[in-house]
Length: 130
Image (cartoon, rainbow, N blue to C red; front, side):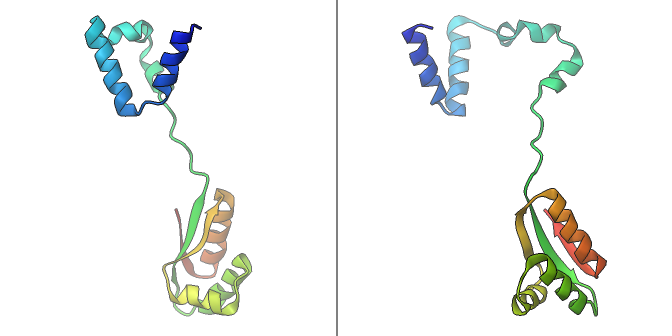
């Protein structure tokens, strides 16, 4: 690669998306290039190829578990389970129950979030995982 090419690439790396879009448009206008000229293979590709080439949606890896409500007469069992799951003191767990909706844990993996939800729902709480 030549020095000039490296300088151009370094310049392009530091551009914003809007600047890159403007650059592409300017190059097309300046040299009379159509969109198909940039990707001649795309026109001949199978219809399913475009879907396969599309970036996949990133899977969520961190979840927030929130206590939405406690069932009628279920405060004590929920309180006990909440303390066991979070290692909170009695006062902190009680405050969390009384100030619903409240966040139980943040930044947990899917497996742990589901475990917390299952345990609390078994004793009568309504839990949300986001």
